[in-house]
Amino acid sequence: MSRSWRWILLQVVAAAAGVWLGITIFNAVAH
Amino acid sequence: MLGALAGVAASLTVVFLSMRAVMDIGGACADGGPFVPRQPCPDGVSGLLVGGIWIGILLALVYMGMAFRQGVPSLAGLLWPSLFISLGWNFLDYGFDPPMGSGVAMGWLIPGILFMLMGGIPLWIWLSVIRAKGLTPSAAKIPIPLQPVAGIPQRLSPSTSAPRVAADLAAALERLDVLHRSGALDDSEYKAAKRRAIAGES
Image (cartoon, rainbow over all chains, first blue to last red):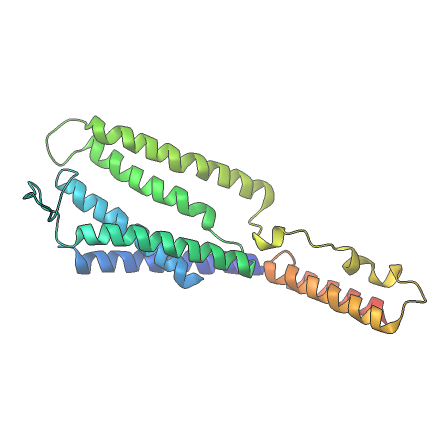
């Protein structure tokens, strides 16, 4: 896998982790 | 850079969910102020919305700046479409099936269609550009003269001094390194080009 695609994959994983974090924050703060 | 991107995604998610929470209670709410709000906001949602928007914008700028500086391919072109398509989805979802009252809420359908267009058209353009040019990193688009890489051995005249040759080789290797780090050259191409550059020098 080329370096570019490794970067893209890493970023997709980071974005997915961010979505999970967003849901967690929302559930913790909003009632 | 990855942390900033995760932060942008988290902000987008918070804004998306907060918007749904507000739409659940009719689409408008107010807290504080001189008047007693008729419809109080769900707890914490107004802060989440405002915080999510501002932190998201800030982190998006950090992410784009870092991606550009490092010369790596980025998903920055997807940020705008993802914001508008996700919020447009909320408008359409609640427009077709409003939580209060029955039928179709035109007041939500119209912004929904507008948001979808505002996100969809840039997304379509982004995809066409990617298809045509690939996910080239922004920094790597700065033209780098390739001539020294390909031509060092052939173009140097016999009278060229040794320090000059060494300097040209160093410059060529640096350019190759930039291309390799940006992804324009994969590992094997990089090694082959580097070998050629070094072999041509001696």
